Each structure stands twice: as structure tokens, then as C-alpha cells.
Image 1 (cartoon, one colour):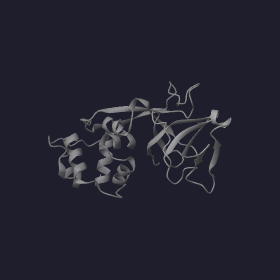
Image 2 (cartoon, helix red, strand yellow):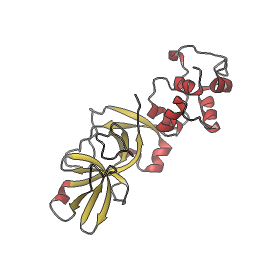
Image 3 (cartoon, helix red, strand yellow):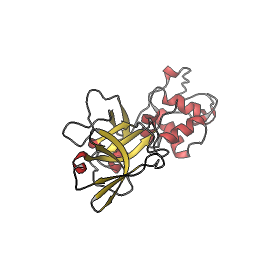
Image 4 (tube, helix red, strand yellow):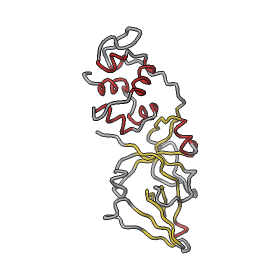
Length: 226
């Protein structure tokens, strides 16, 4: 562990980047940049890590022993000190991209792939935590803003259309992420990658309107690197 980024990764242990970043109140991309050395954390995050893990600041910044203020110096990853989290966290399920029968919402059931932990104060600022789900993105229609295999956080309580914002929408049995615009009598679904996916115009008064549903607003996205 020769770098600050390697030591931060060591502290994260087996916790996913998304969950660890959420517990620190920072974007996953920011944590990834810290771990790879592309950028360095600010003093406030250094202080938070030292307080949470009872770290010796010299160890975190420069790798100087001992690791903790108690004088302990774990030498193996499985001896990492368990973090003492002083914020309330909420697990949000990662669900399949499938609409529940008869409802304009994503199906949450035993088939959920996994859950990610988010800070409750972050979720409350964004909307209704109890109506939020995560969904893994398939396809390139929203690239480069949202990439294939990214994970998005959707608040299913936010169904009122805000022009230009990204929503999860259902059309017939399929789920899409699109920007939505409204013009008299029509709903316009727009992709970021418009060269490959031109806008779709739906007649808000016709038969198509019955097949179209707003599932919820996208309020966060995250990405894992392999």
C-alpha cells in the first residue's frame, strides 16, 4: 500500500464502491478517482476516514505506522477494522427491469440481484426513500451520460413530467430511460445518443397513450469498473 488511494481501497475492503461511496456521501466516480490516484480527497474526507476507522493520520496520508491511534497495525486485508458508521443508511434493492403486473412500477421481489446502501439524508433530499429502486441499464441509447451496465436510482414517487429530465418509462412491456418533453397532444421521448436513436413521438390522446407509463425519475447513476 504505497499510495493514499491504495490505503483507501484497503479500508473499503469487500464493500462495493457504490456502497462505500454512499456511506461517505460522495459519488462513486469520485471514490474511484481517489482509489486510482486520479485525484486526491479533500481534508474533510481525510478527517472523516480517520475518525471512522480511528486511524493515525500519518498512516492514511503517508503510510507511516502505526495504522490506528490505538497502535494496532493490521497486516492483512481480513484484519481491517470494521467501520463505525455514524450516519443512517438504507438498503435500496437492485431490481429486474420488469414492470409489476397492473402497476406502473418496477417489480421488487425475491429475484432482486442485490442491494446497495445509501445515506438516508441523501435519499431524503432527493425524494421518497421508500419508493426508490435501483435498475441496471442495458443498451447505449443514453450514452455518454448513462452507459451500458450502469446502475441508476429511480424514485417511483416522482411521476410528474419535468421537461428535459431523465425518467424510467414503460411502453408496452419494455422499460426505457428517456428524457421526456411534452407538446400539445404528444409525448416526445428523447435519447442522449440521438444519432442512433432519434426522438419518439407518442400520441397522448390515442391508443398508444394507454401503453405508455412514467415509472419514476432517475435521481442518481453509478458505474463499476472491471
